[in-house]
Image (cartoon, rainbow, N blue to C red):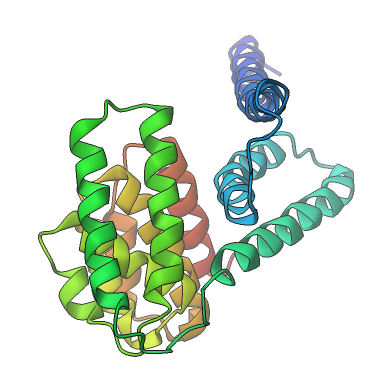
Length: 255
């Protein structure tokens, strides 16, 4: 190996090691935070929805960690089993979040629409009144969880209107509904909304909803135009980049 190639390999290895350290530190930090919270406030109720949101948020980081330490020559077999367990945990967390609707989907509760609008307004108020940070994200995550439950009480929500609305709270309501109840016919409009979404929190959950709608449609039936639009999307947050990269990989049939 020439000196330049050797130096490049060392730099790549150092970057990989640093990346693994950062990801592992973040995951460990989350675990420590949960433990400290339990010690300081043992009576604090952490329900299934809270745990589900935590798992759903952490799984992309774990995937990143696994991908970064994959090595040739058989090691993939060992990590595959771990990855399968992570995927199983993600499915369980997803079921806890989506399955937490009060009466299940499509009950057509007459008060549900008013509740959706109230939660949408609360979301915007939290964004306006709180500084960016973990406390605000936690509040917004709680609102999203309630939107998942509440939108399932509507038999026929106005998804087209919500997805194209200038109201970020209603767009989040659309993502929550499609996350819980993927509708194949919403694919193109959802993809367009996600690509144009200006709010980072919204875009994160929009991508997750889009992943579920793609599964409902079937990868082979996703229009090429939708794939191109997603490929042209350039999110700035690392969590959204990882989710979108995973979705595009799925669309190309590489996993």
